[in-house]
Amino acid sequence: MKPVGRDYRIYGERIYLRPITEADTDMVLEWRNSRAVVENFIYRKPVTKDGHLNWLKNKVDKGLVHQFIICDNVEDTPYGCVYLQNFDEENNKAESGIFLGNTNRRSGIGTEAESLILEYCFDKLELHKVTARVLSYNEASLRLHEKAGYKKEAYLKDELYIDGKYVDLVLYGIVNSDYIKARS
Image 1 (cartoon, one colour):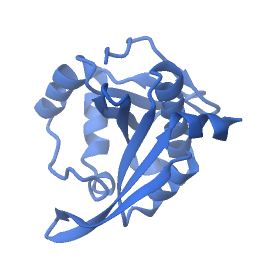
Image 2: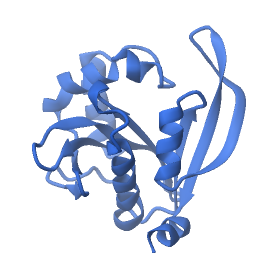
Image 3: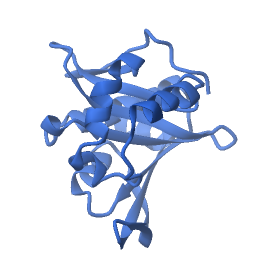
């Protein structure tokens, strides 16, 4: 994939998505390393400033990850991140992920951001399928993906060993034709 242009924007009713920049580093590290985010992520290790800058240079700047900051349309307040990774060009699909800062849960912002990233995936990138992995106990993320139109494709029992215990993983997916039907 090509990297996202720095001026690219995706507008919704209450929010817009803009590409992540190096200037977002401190804010993103605060969100990403917060307990509320870490406990719902598969990757649990703290993200350092050097690690994040390396991510930007070697993943985002090369187009291997498309990461956006979720911002308020009116006040330009940043709320979190939504991103695409694991692009599979042969099968024309990618994996979506999302995390919000602590103050923005249960507001519908996550669902709107996920809907906007799907619009980007299917209308702009012309992907065939988008997937998501969700820890089974993350009720908010399960609801968010279902509201955005994803279908549960698999439930993997004891799939991951996290923090000293086995946890289940739910795999979600949505294909372009189902996305188009849902929008009609």
